Image (cartoon, rainbow, N blue to C red; front, side, top):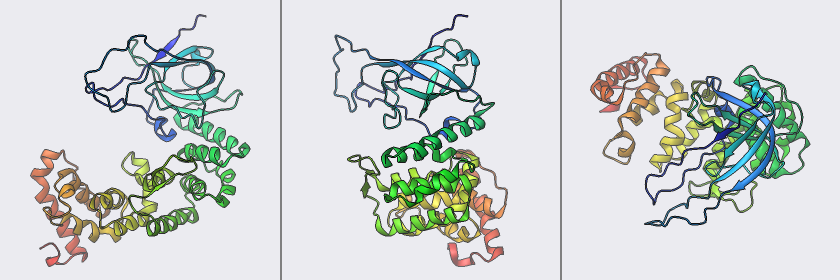
Amino acid sequence: MTRSVLSLAVTLLLASPAAAFIRVSNQPLDRSLYPRYKDRAVIAGTITEVRVERPEDAAPRGRPVIDPVPDPSFIKFHVDTVILGDKALKDAAIEFRTDSFDWPAELVPQVKDGYCILVIRLPGRPEKLPSIYSVVPARRHEYPSASGNEEAQRILSRELVEQIKQENSPQRQWHLLLQVGPILTAADAPAVVPLLDAKNIWLKRAAVGGLARATRDPKYVQMVITDVREFLKTTKLGDEAEGLDPGARRSAYYLLLNHYFFLRTGWSEEGNAESAAYAEAFRLFARSLDKNESAQWLYGIKPLCIAGTKDDLKLLYDYYCSDRLGPRRRILGNPSYRQALLMGISRILNLGLSNWMQKDFIEKEDEQHRQVREALLKLGVIQDADDD
């Protein structure tokens, strides 16, 4: 049977000759294999060719670019095992375009004879090209088949944990932990426990984050909250950190939320439900970042709209009633943020307020505010003078 050669190209989004080149990042596996997605394939195999096409005569540009467009680059990939998807892909030779994909070289070197697992999306129509979502390091062996995305996540969790157990490099252990964390299963979690004794704080944080999410064990949840409390005492918003990649300095807050990825709310209903266990961490952010309105909203107030409890009702209501012409005008001047506050209170009190489109919300905001205020007055959370 003749197998067709598939090609992958990611669209380059260039608004003008001076626009930055857009790269697609290596997606977290809980997102690229989100259970509701029905168009994913997971394949294991070998990179058989890496090539870059350098045009002899590059067209001159009218203006300098912020991020120069790289030369088109490609890999050819031989499929050894189809973990998820059409079994006819086995033994196929697939060509992927990689210049607009942020290939995770720290996990999988992009070299000939390199072995890895790819999470891809096959096209729904013949004129469309497939897309690459995640690159996962792999060992050469026959992988089991998965009946769906969740089972594929379990297979990848097991594979990444086996590599962590065999790895001696703290830097590579760190990258493996960061990739497996969002999909780590409770069954695989015991293999990560020894890394709680890691000397490097970022390696330990990667282990804590994975264990907290996988097990929901209160002791790991408390470790996250305790660490956030200490982090906020010692780290300023502008501080940078290296993680375990020497010379690669990033925002310390950005790094922390990469390790405690469940503190990023709003992506999925399931993630929002899980984030309720970390309400105290969001309160810590809200209290500690009160001198920076944008950061306080992003890390503290907005997540509490999703994960807060009755303990947060007065905080959310007082925030909503803040002076919209004062320091919070950039936030409270946005109707969607005001609605998030009212919807957060509605969720906690089970008021059943409707989540309107922005135009409709502006027309109905006063009525929703009235219902929220009356409910809070009845509970004694606020007094008549609180929002004068």
